[in-house]
Image 1 (cartoon, rainbow over the protein chains, first blue to last red):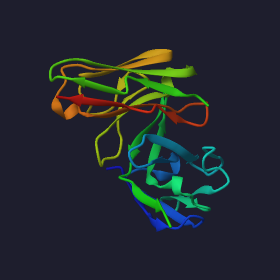
Image 2: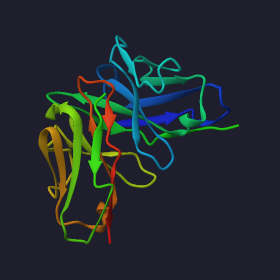
Image 3: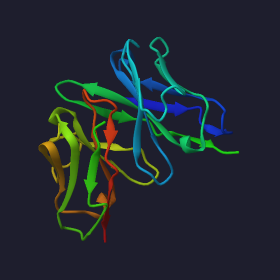
Length: 120
Length: 109
């Protein structure tokens, strides 16, 4: 069974840092592009970053570029999101999701999310 | 950036009726990269449709997707109370960043 479990969320002050983790199981982790998607309270979904299976490419949404860094450890089956210079508007539930690409490409499995609150 | 605009914002229907949700893209999106998700309060999004029209595993045939280019539609027939949720379209292809529509809230009263 595919499982994605996020951790590392919590309360942090503006300007602070936090590192999220997403532990994967039930599939060959090193074969998939992994994503982070967030959802501010009462708002819609926002894709923020992805990392290819071998870490050869990473992309970011403009809203987090230069502040957030995605990385992965295929030996440990974990994808990370290092978040620096956090802002109040980064408050959200952060989901990790697996991207499946065959003829079609889509996010097929999601974790349950971890809440990040940025507040003084 | 490809902007996805969903309409209507809120849809209120009765059990047994059919819901038609629209997703319009600011530029052409390959059908291979268009998906639909359902999200209920406090839950992670759930994949319904990928490749614009293929149902994900375990999704009942009451859910169907169609469209191409810039106009995509999610249709839910024979509505049930459990279909109450927010529905998002999502494009994830060669055009980065990947983007979501703003969502359509479906209420079954």
